[in-house]
Length: 515
Figure (cartoon, rainbow, N blue to C red):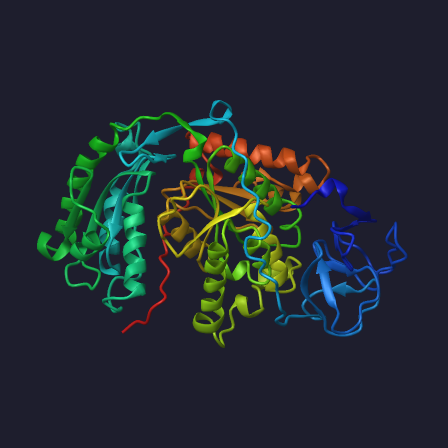
């Protein structure tokens, strides 16, 4: 975990560990600048968030940040050289997974000392942070219909249902032209079911076309769901087509709203909070401010009995050994390695995707040289506590504490899996400025730096750049984030909710072929 206060300042740069041979520029550093506290003079401009060599580094030598390997010198690099993907080589290297050897149980607070929030208790014993009526399409062919039904329920029409947060449509591009059986269909089924039974959803209408491969009957059967007062179904080909399905769907939702409005907020333990941990538009400060601050908040939440779900498998690659060593059992560590191997040996073989080295242009502009450096920061969102379980995409998350779910790095797909698994909050760190929402789950935006926070303040909830500015300690920032979790879980609106984001970010992972 980052302890910013104890890091070595090298003029306007930060050396994050005594073993490091690079420092990170806090602000733009011009060429010819003598770094105080060292004998280093910059040989070229070092933009904020980028790295500068603190000594001569020989070709092939490891580049160390937080004493972790993030690449290798592509050439002989003189002290004062700016380091980035043009002179930092990405290549594979051996890692010691040390399964469960560093495991330390999380110490829970006594129940009397644990925090609470105002949530919606559900019949299955979980608690929601929001109270939605969900419109679920089984196939892309019913997407227009569910969106039209949702659009009918304007704020004015929902005014008579004060306990309902909204009517949300969850449409997607899958459901037909895909394999009838196997993991692609299983994945879609459990994703849809995860939204139907989500703790932030009071009632659902499932809408199919009728001839698709993802049949309503098959979905309900495999997921052990049954129609009832809060789960209704409709098939367009049986209802008379598009217009009549929309009209009939509106009438069904009116009935579901009555049921949903019966739910009221009540005091529940913070152990019911499950946070999906996301990062997007990362930069060189992600690993110094927002990600470790979020990790601190997850540690606090875990002590209160709650759950943090780290995901984005390509964005832990290269540092996965720092997680496996903290796993509760060797078997849990092996589960994580198996997921990494599936990505490397099956799913992404020969593909120009980030697990094979190259991060997005935005990440590169933000100072990240490759996926190893990005992963170093990304993994920090989970804190330093024990890894308690590893889940496949959209599997129900039932274990408390810090867990991992296998997802892609693409934020809408990743968050969809976390929410399907039960995340009733999403915490999203960003350095470049991701604008994201994820109904029915509130999305909390955490900025890594003050300039971006000020530029995009309408989208950002908390400025973790205060750590970099010296205005807050890491512990203070983590506590602030945790308290904001409680505030949002109790009904406080996030910036993304104020902007009504999240209407189009339901994106189930498509791992199969289209035929």
